[in-house]
Every structure is written in structure tokens, then in C-alpha cells.
Image (cartoon, rainbow, N blue to C red; front, side, top):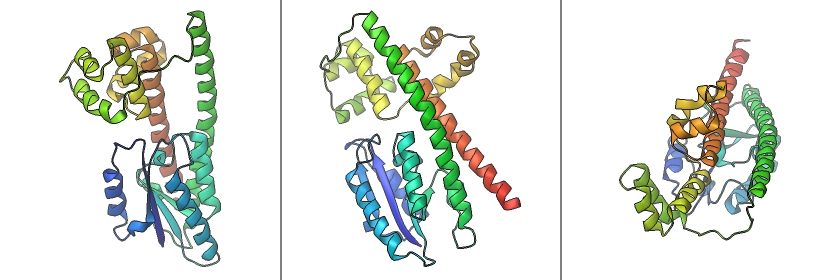
Length: 279
């Protein structure tokens, strides 16, 4: 088995220690040179080290074509490959077409030992992932287009002018203040003062910070989700209970539903593999 791994975080002030430890725990003998790392957003797949890894993999798959040697790529979580559903689907398809086994540490069914007799299991799991991501990508595309259209219409009705320059604050400066604010150690007013922001601007920047870094309060969402989906609460009432803005509420709901999709995906893969093994 020839092993490679990929690690990614969204910004330079974040570290890769957790991903590194998880991968080395799974494959203690992995070579350090075979671990590729990027500190860049998952919205783009044109990442320097990720592309380097793919070029190497392409050459290796050709060199070992027709042999019984397997090549694997390990990631801690599937979203380390990327945040875009359509893009992740295409990357999974690329790995499958090149005969590369993708190990996703958060999905146990992708961690099965591979040999010539059971490689069909990992191929089937990868195909299920591709099909699910294709479906989710289309849904996300339609939702995003709808949200953008509605948002632009509402903004224009309110006379909003686009293109106003933001007050930029570095991610590494926000993080310690955000953590203290979320922990209740400082007030929003004090946090805003430390960042040099007005209160209204502070809340907008915190919403943006959460979205860029994939942060959301799952417990808050779960406290209202069923009532909101059943129609017992409207979005304004849910926002009041959660003490967040409409824009932040929409983001929280979207992230929660993405998590539910991922959890359902893992359950479906596990059930499919179990059924296939029994047959």
C-alpha cells in the first residue's frame, strides 16, 4: 500500500496539529514527505500543495498500473478536500477513475483494509459518496441562487448601494477576542472596542468570521429546528429565541442541515456496506 495524505485549514493562523495526529494514528508509518498541507480556503481547488499531490498521484498510478499495489489518500474529514459540493464530487470521481482509495477518517466504512478481492467495497462506497454529493450540490446550487436573488431584491428595495468598502480585520486578531466574547468573558461592546468596530459592525464581522471558519452553535439550532420546520415558529421568532440575526439564522440552519446530510450519508454508506457483505 502506497500512502499519501492531505491536510487543510482555511487560514494561516489555524494549525494542522489535530489532522496530523489523526492521520499518523491511523497510518503511523506514513512518510512525512507524503503528507501535503495547505492553509487556504476550501472554496477553491487550485491549492498549491493539493495540486502537487495530484500530479504525483497521477504519475504513480501510471507507474503501478496493472500491478496489485494499491494507492491510498487519507483525509481526516471530507470537507478538507473542499467546501464546494460540486467540486468535492468531481475530486472523488477523479480519485476513483485513477484507482486511488480515499480514506476519510470520519467515515469508518472507507477505512476497510483493501485487497484484490474486496476493492469493490471501497469503489462502491466512493460511488455512493459521489452520487450523494451530486444530489446535494444541485440542491445547494438552487438554494444559493434563490438566496442571492431574494437578497439582492430586498437590498434594492431598501435602497442599499453595493460596493461599499468593508472595515477589514485580520482573522488572527479576531479569534482570541471572538473566543472571549463567546465564553462570556467580555461584552460585545468591549469586544467591538478592542477590534475598533462599532457594535453593529462588530456583529456583522462576527457573523462573517463564523461563516468563513465554519463555526455555528448547533445546540441553539436544535432548540428551535423542529418547531421552525413544522411552522410553529417563523424565522423572526426563532431568531429572537436564539438571539441572532436573520442572516446568521439562515447560515446556522444551512450548516445544521449540511451536518444532517453528512450524518445521513454516513449511515447510508454503513447500511449499504453491511447489506453487501451479508449478500
